[in-house]
Image 1 (spheres, rainbow, N blue to C red):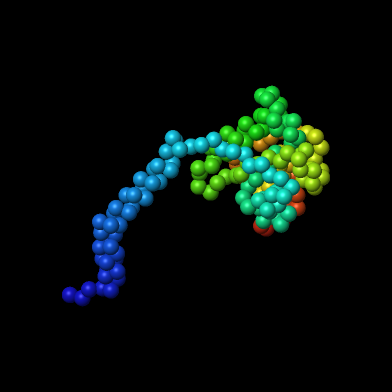
Image 2: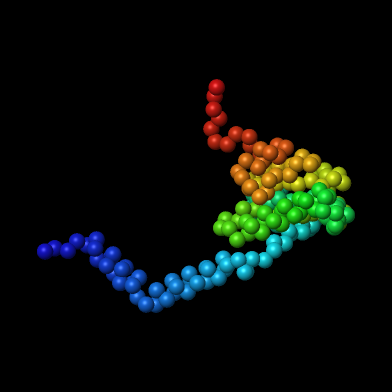
Length: 182
C-alpha cells in the first residue's frame, strides 16, 4: 500500500504539538493572558496632556496620518481644573476617562483621550482657532472633526459614524470609494 506524501507533514506536526514542552508553554501563555485581563489589574485611565511641543509628534495631525483615533479636549486651565461637576469640561473629561478606561484593554484600542491646556499652549489655540470655550475634536483617518458647543459624542457607544454627529471634516473626503450616480 502506498502512503501519500500529504499525510507525513501533518503527522510530524501532530507529534510536535503533542510534546510536553509545547503544552506547558501554551498553558503558561494562557495563564498570563488570564492574569492580564483580570479585573483586579484594571487601572484608571489617564487622559494624556498634550502641549505645543508634543501635539504634532504624538498625534501626527498635520501629516494626515494620525497615530490612531484621538479625542482631544481643548480648554482653558480654569475649565480643566474646575471642581464643579456641572461644568462642560468636567463632564467631557469624565466621559473621556470612563470610555477610555473601558476601551483601553480591548484589542485594537478604540481611541486615545487627550487634553490641551489653551492657556499654556497658545500656538495650538491659534492653530485651531479656538476661543475660551471648551472644544472637543476627533482626529481620525486623515481628518479632524469638531463637535459643536454643547454637543459631545456618546463616547460610551463609540461607533463608526461619530464623525457624522460632528460638524464636518477637515480635508476629509465625504465620498469614499466609488460615487453612485443617480
